Image 1 (cartoon, rainbow, N blue to C red):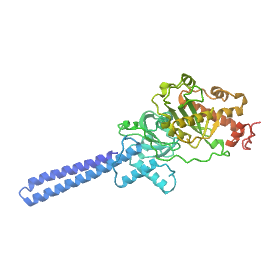
Image 2 (image 1 turned 120 degrees about the vertical axis):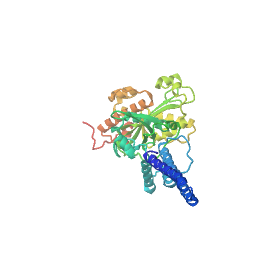
Image 3 (image 1 turned 90 degrees about the horizontal axis):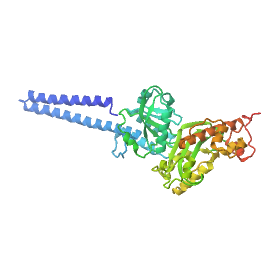
Image 4 (image 1 turned 120 degrees about the horizontal axis):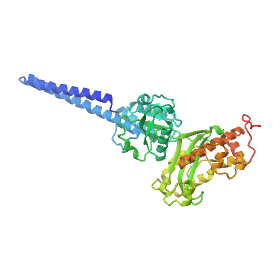
Length: 445
């Protein structure tokens, strides 16, 4: 925060103090014989120096508070800040703290508008470039420094300035780790930028900070803490009449440490968000989980995740909040999705989590069989081939979840071609009933 304004003010105060000292020296020479004039002159110089010191102390406190407010926004200090702020900055800090810690929906009404104004003011106070992106990569809010650095404005697509792949990986690390991370983001043209990335939660976007002072505070980002400027969106009913094209889905892949595929504790989770047939790869989750117990060789051979890979990772209870947020207000889809949900419920019970909130499901394997009975019992590779999906590497939870998401998109496209456009129609088709097709999307002759 202590940029050009700080330097100019301090230079002015230093010049004033030097002038007063010079004046005091001159008085000692010119008024040495006049005792009254000598005392009065030195008293005036002393009062002047005290005034300069007072102004210096107040300005130092003000600029230090600006620094601390900026650091609170960007999550750059790994310590508890107990020193109070004063004046307008104290009110700004209080608004930011309230916005961060809120668990209720505050996006509407007078309080929501006040928080939004406070965030905009706080962004404007920072000399470091700061901006907030939504989950589609659009710029929601930014300060002038970020606008100059990236050449973007509110509502613009960040993909025009930064490579999406770099940003997606940084967002996934921030979400998976539950803490802000440092990253190097390449520009779409030449060059790269050091950034700090903080996930704001599902459907809430991400905060990017490009420190003008370099990465001096990078070590402060290692603490396990989260930044939440806005609450998650409230759950909405996902009824049978809802169109498939507008439903929120989450492709879910779960690996367990049991000898059998449907047994043992969860050791890996991957998710990718969809809305209808649109995949949002940046809104994803990839976690490895330490089951405490050894991972059998049969389990490692099944999904490629062995004991060495999960050793030292966080236990299930520690990562469950991130998993629950990724599944919030979505329909979980995947091959054998009910087994994946059952595995999560089993691990939650072992971890002492009472009544975990689990999403409704839609099994992609059953949906594929409903479209083509010849695919009964087909493997994931066979299903991908049947629906002409490109061959991709499936290494790790993210790759597996992305494959499930692409299969879901292919199946939703086939359903639309057959005139099955609502959730109720899709479930009726799986159940073997007569799914009444939409007259706006009649099946092909």
